[in-house]
Length: 236
Ligand code: HEC
Ligand code: HEC
Image: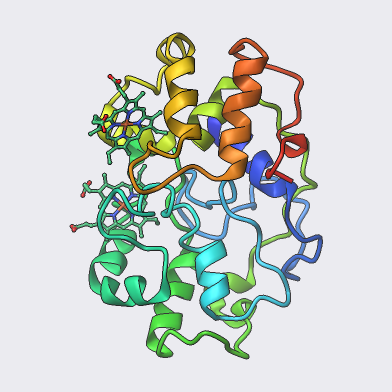
């Protein structure tokens, strides 16, 4: 669960202070929008829903399918970066998320919340509009999400490096780059192939992901640091 907590912190850093106005609760056990006792509320990898979020492509892209593109950005089929690609793969995408098959459990990413699933269904049912006036918070599954806690600082630790920058490598390379010892040993080649854009194939890392690798290497590949990720180029 440590990873999940770190992730929540990481993604919460850059998000809007205007949260969905659910009923705030001080009951620490009531922080989940579904009835599962497991940790599927997805608050660890998605910015919270804002009052102004509408059921459109921007919302779907940034707050529902945001965790998919790390793997489905080109190298792993189906590609899910554009609206047309999502529509073309509508049936399998819905069945994968409804059955909690994606994101894969092995990735350490949270499954989609009931709100995210329902938003994707409703958006597709509405004809997958680019813009919309329907507020996401008006969906019953989305209305009851409590405001998230204030975002603490995320530091550049091995878990962040692995889950943020190297997450997509494991699909093709197994554990070659995804254990601490392996990544530490191979940091030079990792930096070389990722900064040249040759890895992951056809799906180069973002500026923030490259900054994470560079800073981690510069700090001599430690398990933990006191470097805030948000200060790295491209990560604010
Ligand atoms: C860590 C990498 C990773 C992430 C993140 C990920 N996927 Fe996948 N996905 C895969 C791999 C690998 C496959 C192909 C092998 C398999 O089916 O497990 C796949 C297969 C699929 C398929 C095709 C299934 C089929 O039966 O043809 C769909 C659709 C899909 N993913 C949707 C998604 C969606 C939607 C998300 C985000 C909510 C997501 N994936 C997140 C790695 C990932
Ligand atoms: C879609 C599959 C795929 C993904 C995802 C992927 N790779 Fe690769 N990688 C390959 C293949 C295939 C090769 C060997 C052929 C080549 O060099 O182009 C390779 C080669 C490499 C090599 C060169 C190995 C050598 O022996 O010289 C490195 C280093 C590497 N990958 C690192 C990474 C890293 C780091 C990531 C994640 C950021 C990554 N790869 C993601 C498929 C992948």
